[in-house]
Image 1 (cartoon, rainbow, N blue to C red):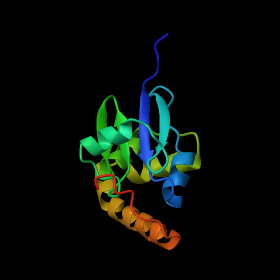
Image 2: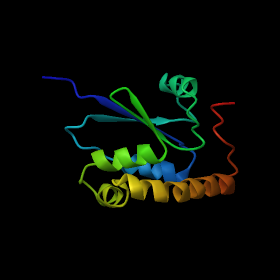
Image 3: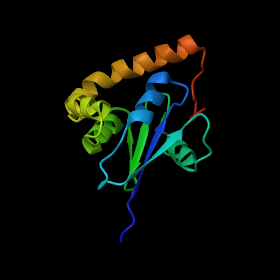
Image 4: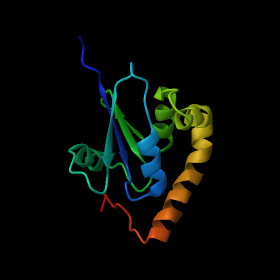
Length: 130
């Protein structure tokens, strides 16, 4: 029996939108196992790797699949493509964002909403790049 690959999703745990998405998100069983990493509270080594690669976590979430890092709109599109059809959230996500065109169009608005929610909550940036 082969071991299923782990897919890492690095998100902002202080953002209610991001946390909700991470909580409800499911991937297709045959794709692998989803590992959720809160960029604000985790000590996972992937955070150092993200910073080393100069990927700005304040500009978007990160997904690592098969050793490849996807950021922002690309991460959103990938997650929609590998999402399961197990719940309403995944079905909606797949419908809205599986296309790279729709993910490219909508991601700036989602990021702006995230920034607004963080501002309302009085949270600062993750600032992983210093």
